[in-house]
Amino acid sequence: MAIWFVGTAVSASERFWWLAPTLSAIAAILIIWFNWGRDQLRAWRMRRGIEVHLTVAPEGGSTNWGYELHVPPEAELSIQLRLKPRFDYQQHTVIFGFRGKPDEKPEPISYLNTFIRRGLRRAVARHARQSIR
Image (cartoon, rainbow, N blue to C red; front, side, top):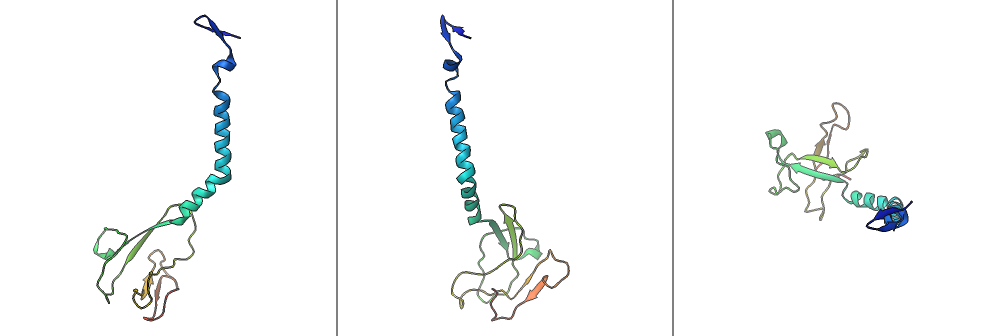
């Protein structure tokens, strides 16, 4: 079947010349995505899987959340952490610590999980020189 445009006959293959390359490009993109793209995206998201915010005085009504704290040395204070995951997962353990030399970095004395009403893991006190690992 020929279609007449300004006195010339155009066949369907001449009119839809872009269809085969477009479908081939879509197929190639899907093959690349399912073979390599999903894994690369997951690995990129796993580099920083959780966004952590903290504040010094959560019981004082302060809602200013930050990424770092500056406090005087030898100070004892309560810190509230907010963990915001960037993907679905199940959490079994939280490991909390600091980078640096062991003599210069702060040591957690105790921790309290407010999401547990009763039980052994709600509040745990540590000795002053015992490291939390």
